[in-house]
Length: 202
Image (tube, rainbow, N blue to C red; front, side, top):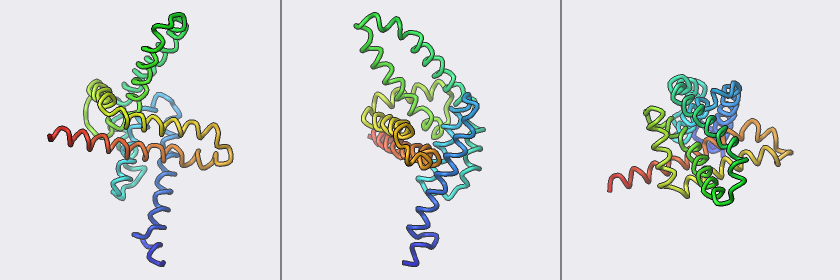
């Protein structure tokens, strides 16, 4: 029983994980306040999350801001390009609503676009490429691993829905929700990469 509370014990590891998720959530929220920095914040968050999964025993804040600075420009370019696409999609809604034949193709493209958004930042945090190559690779990964992309989309969906409906646990959602979401999706993304690398070896 006493072993549970030492540095290798279950209780200690759970408490350490909760602490890491709390710190990760807070610094991600604070560094996303300018809005334009959301892409860099997500990329840095995934960098830290991969370290948590791999149990590197890293300093959360140190690794976060190191990745934030390193990937800032590429992440910001990608984030701004997404904002432009989202703006164009919103502007096109009145036009699309008039023609039923174009609504389903547009819905499909929007779904693929959203899934690509959720793959691109973990990909950028994991591999050193420019913004264009990262966008291209994330698009093809979504098409190649649709079920995993849907799961990642689902985790984000649950995170946002949780903030709306889980009133009694709002503080839990606020201080641990984002970090938990990022770590869960990092694990799912790792499974995509493992399958991709396995297929490449065959």
